[in-house]
Amino acid sequence: MTAIIRAEHVAKIFRQQVRRSGMLGPLKDFVMPVTRPVNAVDGISFDIEPGEAVGYLGPNGAGKSTMIKMLTGILAPSAGTVSVLGRNPQAQRVLNARQIGVVFGQRTQLWWELPLIESFELHRRMYRVPASVYQRNRADLVEMMELSAFIERPVRHLSLGQRMRAEIAMALMHDPKILFLDEPTIGLDVVAKDVVRKFLSRINRERGTTIILTTHDLQDIEEICPRLIMVDDGKLLFDGTIAALRVTFGARRRLTLEFAQDPGHVELDRAEPAGGEGVQRLFLLPDDQRPLLHILSALKAGADLRDVRLHEPGIEEIIRTHYQSKVSA
Amino acid sequence: MSAFLALVTAAFRREAEHRSRILMRILGGLVEILARISIWKAAFGGHGTLSGISLDEMITYSLIGGTILSSWDATMIVRDVGATIRTGAIGSSLLRPMHYPVMLLAEQIGVRLFDWLLISLPVIVIMGSIYGLQPPESLAHALLFVGYVVVSLAILMGFAILVGLLSFWVFDAHALEWFMRGLLAVLSGGLVPIWFYPQGLAEVAHALPFSWIAYHPLAAYLGQRDLTEELLILAAGAGWAAVLAFAVAFVWSRACAQVVVQGG
Ligand SMILES: Nc1ncnc2c1ncn2[C@@H]1O[C@H](COP(=O)(O)OP(=O)(O)OP(=O)(O)O)[C@@H](O)[C@H]1O
Ligand SMILES: [Mg+2]
Image (cartoon, rainbow over all chains, first blue to last red; front, side):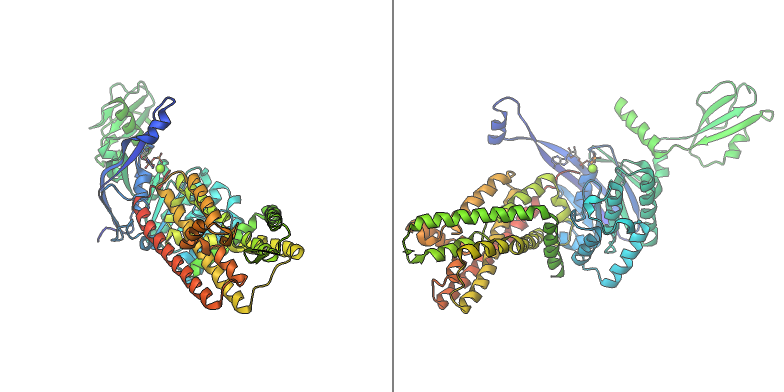
């Protein structure tokens, strides 16, 4: 299968103007501007296959939005190439736009003053969606995203959560092959986040729409994206599954054992003791896929085990550990 | 085409949302026309004609030149495009499968149609019933005038979009806006007909496309020239509109490659 999205050694360098201080500062800035390069994206490569759902992750300023802009054709890379559906998205922006759906959480694609339903109508005409396809999609999307209560209201009267659901619905109205989302769950409450996540993973499963989304909420990624791309400071840190992330960043499962009385010295095969005393003991388990029973069978026969708890580190934890280790390094 | 019309309609409806503004703008229009007419009355000072133009003709010139052929509001495009770029809202437009200048044109036509219908028309009716509005010279002149209005709109929009696109390079759209406003006030002949210009300035005005925005359509309306001459001038205006359209397409292709979508 050939990649639907391909980035090859992509870089984007912004020139940020350095402001000088003092009374004459603005004058100097005008006559002889001094700029400083910012490597927002720094030599990133990846391939995405049709039907994948990929989470694009990284701290603030890591270059996520910049990458999405380049993939959607509204920003030209400074170096390297991006290709989306076999095209250069920037050179063939209009053709590309017809086949992708884009949601920027920070920005609206809807027509602010018009009732929501008219935004959908305008969208239909711009994307030349055949009437029958449009009728079907609109009915489906309005139902799945629960838009019917406010579809007649002007967009400017919608709450953030309502608007975001509408944005996502509109981005899918023309059956795009790829859906790009830049922070689609920003500012949503728990219930709305849940609706959006379930919806996106359903679209990915049922329609086979390729999804690439950036987020700071790692639960988005756990629920929608089997694959994860992590960037920091413009550079690629990790590309793979969440399980692989655990291995790469050495995040291990934590086992807590509780005994009826102090068992004395406890030793488990290949598990590293991680504290605890008296009746409670902690261990870090290696990533070797051994069943838990197998591990526990190593306990002394007489040990009076009361409770066993296994803690899987979430990606949040993994990433926090990683960021912290970077700060302290 | 259907997308274009849909955008025109959407812009029209969006304007209609700001109902409270309509009354204020009609009042403003009335005051402006009143001022223009008073100035012309003073200028004529009891003379029957000036350079072969009667006061009644000048009143008609002010009524139409100050409303449907006014270039004042068109300069807003420059401000809008500038703000769109500065805030990064341009990103939303660029994500749509349409060329940005075409979207701008559709939107501006919607706004313009709204203004004609809900602001210019009431002002012309009210002031016309007080001071008198001359009918077009003949039916043929009336038809030509309609053609001229289309050309006028095309040139005005083409130029405004062209200047608007310059804000991709010049970050200060405000300066561009005022430059354009001043230029058009003088060279379109909307305020003072080019008949009254000193010769040098008149020649400059004739050599540039802006005189098709207000002066040529009004001269045709008032029947200042014979029909063959009118047709030739109209064709020249259409030529200018085409030149501007090419210029917009060219500048846009340049702007596309280097636009930086802010924010995110
Ligand atoms: N138009 C611009 N001009 C100059 N520098 C820019 C511009 N846009 C972005 N940058 C810089 O590029 C870097 C990456 O920005 P980007 O918006 O891609 O980050 P991000 O990963 O989306 O961050 P966040 O999580 O905060 O949204 C930042 O350091 C930012 O300051
Ligand atoms: Mg961002």
